[in-house]
Amino acid sequence: GVQTCALPILNSSNSSVIINGSNNNQMNQTFGADGQYIWNVECCDTSNGCANDFNNRTLTVDTVEPATTLVFPQNDSNSSSLYGVDFYYNVTDLHNITNCSLLIDNEVVLTDTSITKDINQSMSYPVPNGYHDWAVQCYDQAGNLNVTGNYTINITFSPQTYSARWYETST
Image 1: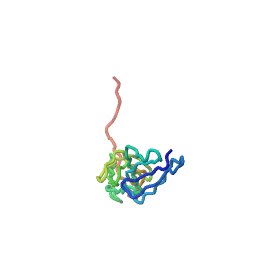
Image 2 (image 1 turned 90 degrees about the horizontal axis):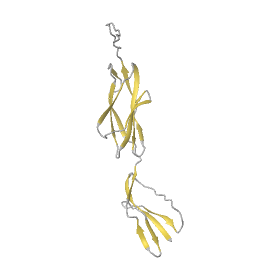
Image 3 (image 1 turned 60 degrees about the vertical axis):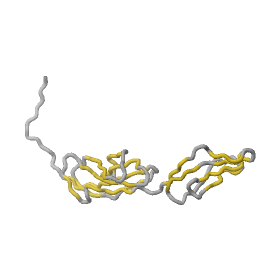
Image 4 (image 1 turned 90 degrees about the vertical axis):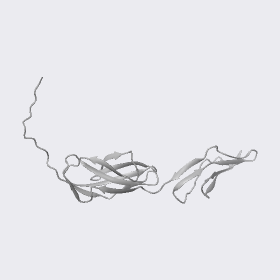
């Protein structure tokens, strides 16, 4: 039977014996830094020697939240747009971003799942009259979350009024 199995981390000095003459199939490995680690399993017995799995695997360790920056509108700004506000932000991370959401008054109102890192992106939303806080929250592929601080925007627009008479006709 199998005497030992090891988990060699091929691009690191870390390696662990995970089975030592028992039926244990669990492993514990501590990684000192974020990054990508290539690993394999090597098992040895007394009759056949040692063998590795045919395929290496990659494990990504990511403990850092994405960096998200509010770009526009600036804090304490005003808008009188009847058609909504374009909220611009920028997000960066070492790995992919899963989604970013626009928060108005601490409530998620829009979520975007097609994020391009390191460029200004926007979400448009029709905000009602008054003072409102806005922020953006982003999740990276590892589930790390970053929520920006709030910016305040004052929305002041007058509803459109029509002075013409409207009526319906039937045909």
